Image (cartoon, rainbow, N blue to C red; front, side, top):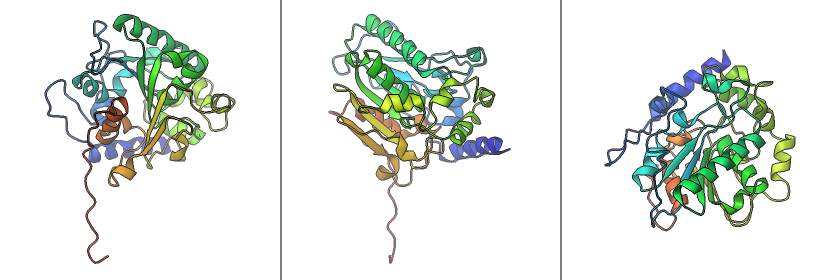
Length: 302
């Protein structure tokens, strides 16, 4: 009952705060989680992604790889950011990772052991670099997808191949088991994978041996730029501040510090137009774009 209610509340929430599709020329950018998560195929590349003939431009010399989160896939996670990056001149790539015990056949990814998922990411990065001729990539990940690449960067020699890691509500310091059940409730059938069929769920519980190992001895690696974008409303990664990193070359952003009226939460982060503007700025800080933030009305007589 609780999980069904969470899913219903999220649906109403996304409907109430969904932004309209972008009217700019190029691929449609739909800032609407209801549309984004209602995809046809979990293995379909999101719009603008996985053109293996794409060659990075001088303006954007690094391809961007999009990394989904737990229980999600590349299609449902990136219906906004993938076309947005494509329209802004980036070579964009996305992958599915972390199938476990046949979960991929059910369209459920990001549930396998994180170390193995990081190896899958490593292979995908090598494939992207070989195809594009670039020397490094930028990574943008949601939830586990913002944390798992840190294992690749630190323990699988990824630092030499990654320029920037941008995390949307990343599970950098884990969450509670209740938070994982909440996340699973949003994906039909995913709750069955919590526990024995979801190794990453155990690894993402705050205080786990995996996270202790990942965060020990420093949370960042020299040479890589880190950006964390988070919402105070996050109901999965709790407390919301557990997403943030400490160390050099780290920028931690709280959406509501920019736009107090932003009501984005965990699952809607990839579809939040303010968060997506932050992604563009993290990837190209020399050419910042302004987030379309609704101003707070002044208090009369206050």
